[in-house]
Image (cartoon, rainbow, N blue to C red; front, side, top):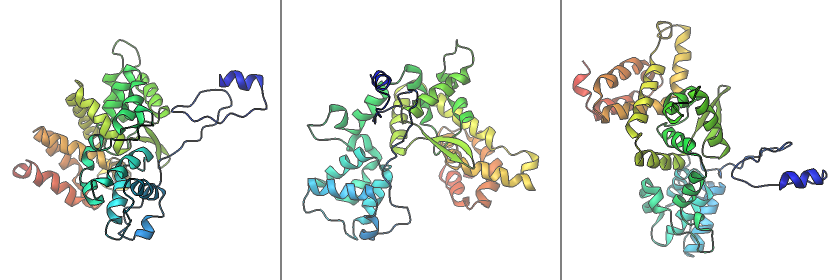
Length: 321
């Protein structure tokens, strides 16, 4: 309809809001990002926290639900963290703020590990898909093809950002095994997920990377857990990280070491996720190999305590020798 309108009336400009780009000639995309959230260094200064649009939205919707609610120095830190944990997503923030009738911000924050179960009870005059966070994501997920759904679920194993080769390594099983060029299928389906706003394109040092908002990642992991690929996807992720992290002799010292350290810094979250998975699954030998291959990164980049938590908090402590 839009194409026909513009073809018949060349002087007309159409402003369209959509889940996906229309892919029409002359189309210019203007992505609408989540609302800004307070930086992590923000303390309990209510005036400073309320400068962020996400916090202002939370306060407005909380006061609509409970008129006596006020943003104070006592709860500003919790409200700021709620907005950060919800990635600045307006619907999620509105649903969370409505819970102020029952929960103080600190108690609400403590329950955010179960976002899908907590963020319900939207207004009855909204479309059904906007009354809970889960139904909103279900609606978007159901619009994907089967292959896109499978790839989306598998991408939940990434903690932090990832690049195309990583997506291909973890998502290859989601491509049609009978079709040639399975990696190409992953690339096409990843592009569709980006177009659907479920995966966010990013850039690091000029290189394209991708990521899922934490709220979206939680949903993807739920979908992955419900299917048959939970273990295989995590094993593929851990194997990819192990191969990526293994330094060459030239990267252990000298000029090549900096590039190796930068590469692992970009994969910091994935390193931690791989270590956690290997320890939890009693895959102790590959876990030890990964920790030994990367100990210099954890030490030189100031993450030694984090590595110790995987080692001492897991079952590797007796095997380090």
